[in-house]
Length: 143
Length: 320
Image (cartoon, rainbow over all chains, first blue to last red; front, side, top):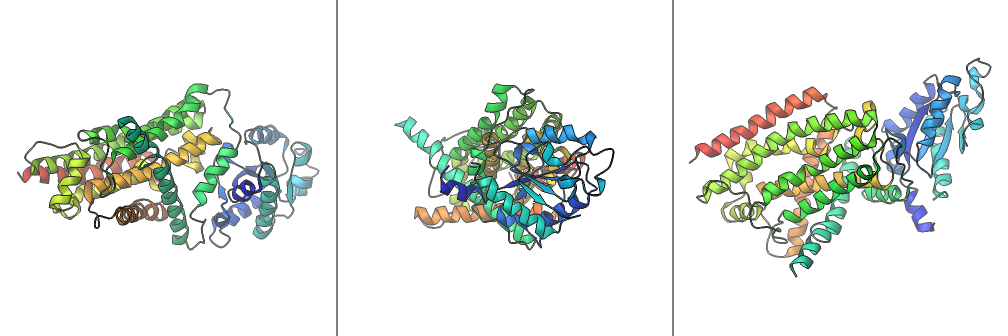
């Protein structure tokens, strides 16, 4: 696809959140990055959408517990291509504090391809925005 | 020749190309001002265009439970209805409308097409969230159509009685009447009707206090849930066009006065009027109000706008 189209398209990434058994800490940070005026990510064209069918960038938090795994995979399949996955927090990367739990079988990239990892427990809002910015660069090359 | 003219009116000006760009522009200005009201920087004004380009490049997913034909063609219905609607409405000094009589009634039916296409799309997509959205959309439509109908009737009666007939349902005669004897905006008995019409605009467009059908936080965007790519882009575009059609209709009904004879100045004046109207009826409302419940919205529409419109109708009838 042409450079011009990539340049245009990278200004409109829509974000969808999946909570894969997270303790809600990362979800609070994610809501903070987009929803408060201080970080105003809408100026980059980013907006949260309520449906996975509208999304471009998926933010996944939580250690992917055994119960929620199939649902995460199903929602991931419902996101139209091209898409990018951002793992937010230490849990989807390595399991974090839930690492040896009986409910956690494997980390996120054992199930779906992860493009950007944002470590932290929870990561700072700036780190999440940085992760999204990296995700946008990866996402635009997939058109 | 007539068919060529009709095609130009629907596809290039004032429908089609012109309407789409103006609709996207109004949406962009709305998003920018909304952000500024929250003291944010906000997206650039051309953001909706970027969103449309992006959505057109995305994959289209059709659920296994969906009815393919209706699911694919539902977005086109509302979009086409809005393009036809904008071609009907006269713009002072630039465009005199398509028909000479009865176009107000045609317009009323065309205005319900976007909601109808949303309902068809929702029922064809086979998702429980969509069907909740469908029932909410239907309830909303029943609520705001009643005051809207009474307002249109009031304007028709007002103009008709002044020119010695019973009621006039022709937009071009309504506009001509106002150009001759002053805009209805400055007519005291019409003020309640104008307020009622302005109350109907956010409900028809479906912005925050009345976006109950698409409530993204409770029912995941309802009827739009299963749409992706081009279909979604078309629904979003229809939203912008709906805003434009309602503004243009309000301008034609209540304040069609132009400035001078030069078409460019009249065009800019028309766009300015659209922007002011959409700021007060959409942006300001959605920046300051929270989403209502279905029963609250229903009650609101059947109480205030309906009462205001009825007051106007009675005042108009009494003046004879």
